Image (cartoon, rainbow, N blue to C red; front, side, top):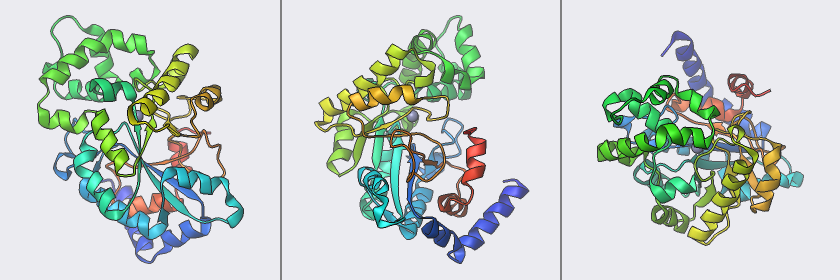
Length: 332
Ligand SMILES: [Zn+2]
């Protein structure tokens, strides 16, 4: 950890200790939505194949304790309703969400949610839940970590993508499939189960179990399509088909939708009519902020990753550093 970060963490820990961060949050009031992806075993968190946006199990348990100290933790649908009806004043609420629903959450997030009584929302790329296909960002990270996982043959386009993985976020689905369809199958087949079972998407029977435990299952496109990079007809199909598939598989309409990647260039108001047509009531970005005054189809969230210590987590939760976060995320 750098000297600046150590000092920031030290100050945050001191402010948290005297309750100042919680008081700032209460004074500000409003709705805060947390965005997780995977919660994994502490021992694997530092492995090069684990995304930086995963959180270790013991940190996750600690973070759930902290949010319950800050405010009422309520199901997202209820939180959004409360935010829309602000007549009762600036009452605070918190909601917990997970994007992509990787399988490690079954072993490491589920029991913490159960014992703490927190009902969370899981946003699922429906095609991945059906096929078990690994996510593009994971495949590229795995290939960077262990090049021998790649299929044989001349794969210049694949090698270029592995060198600059962020490039995939601006590619159309058909372009991505041309480079990655076969490599993904090979990586998935060659990968040891211990790694695959951390990163693989949950299947529908696992998602049904979460739904039965009171968690919300929402849509996250079919193919984890970053909408801003796709043609209008593809954007539309990705939204409509994923919401329909959640309802068909689980017998419950998807009220919520999370935009893959969720950044400023990754979706736009042109998607709103399709979302409404799909029956979606609220949609989530990854922009930092409180969700109270926001457009229900562009709700901000606080993204949590492995860099968060309990102190820096409490600092971000308080809202004191939202402006810095927004600058980092290049939101205007
Ligand atoms: Zn995602």
